[in-house]
Amino acid sequence: MNGECYVYIVLPGETEFVTAGKFVLTKNRFDVPVGKFVYGQSYLARENAVPIDPFELNLGTKIFETKRLKGVFGTLRDAGPDYWGRRVIEKHSGKTQLGELDYLLYSPDDRAGALGFGLNREPPAPRREFNQTMDLEKLQSLASAVVNDEDLLPDQETERIQELLLLGTSMGGARPKAVVEDSSGLWIAKFNRPDDRWNYARVEHTMLVLARACGIQSAESRVETIGDRDVLLVKRFDREKTDQGYRRARMLSALTLLGSEDSYQDRDKWSYLLLVEELRRISSGERLDAQELFRRMCFNALISNTDDHPRNHSVIALKEHWRLSPAYDLMPSVPVSIERRDLALICGDAGRYAHAKNLLSQSARFMLAPQEARAIIQTMEQTIADRWYEICRAEGVTEKDCDRISGAFVYPGFRPLIDGNRP
Image (tube, rainbow, N blue to C red; front, side, top):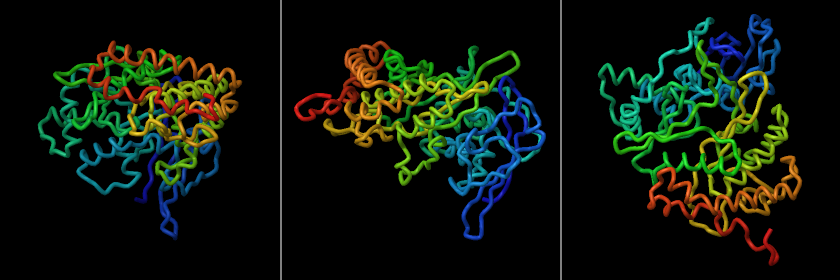
């Protein structure tokens, strides 16, 4: 789709949108989508103006242009809907043939990060109404209807909550979700699906707790039971509640930092080794964040989180400076192989191979001495082996589900014999 829209941003410390610039999406004579962005002069004149993306869209008067990502700049894509969000938008709009610009415009203003989009030069007022946690049962029902591709009932209450179901359509991942509010702030509500292999809500919550036990900064979470179903609530770390409204953190996914596509054809760029270099360039706490990323890489290997793709890592800037966000979307898997498991991102000299020697092979890039990296792995390995079951049961994971996921933790191939010695 050809077209244009204005790009809005909530500046650090503020709660209202201002217009940052204009985005135009066209096609060249070879029918290739081309995106162009230009900052507004009034925005550049602001003393508190910040770049939308400090690398690809730094402040300046030039016209920025890209042919990548169907002509959509990475930072704009990050503010667009994920797979689940696109399904909800298509269901809500009644259209299945939508262009990239349509998805940006149909998404709600409470998308991930600090950006917004619209057709008017002046930005709309931030949305003040949020679904309350008490409406989770209705949201669960609507989410199930979308999953099952069922028609939604056209009553007034459903239409209101269906609008609110759109909140959360760009929060990452393919699971059904919505944004809800309680007295402490905003949460992402993630719903179980009928075809889940185990209780995803409780298991994901438990992995966030287990990560903290391993010294990792993970997102705050809790589980609410609605009827006979559990819903995972994850506290939004890109929002800060104030008396005037919500302050918003700018947000960039690792996919954007790596200059990568979502597709598997671009997987050579999916790399912790490349990501830590970009993290060191953008972070105001490069050593702490580099070492934190190493811990998360090791944790993913030790719980067999083989879906640790670049959208599941990000940096945020609530004020001027960028830092690694809290960890999120942590989920074990149980591949058939007990000898070899691969992460989604390259993690060492042996590629994606999730074993100790490979994780240690490039530890210097994470600003760690060999003995420091080895100590991190050994301590984390012991913690996970000793405590995963205890924490799972304490957080309400059933005995049956513990049995289902037991093969994920510290799998035998994590420390294969190398020349008769363990790494």
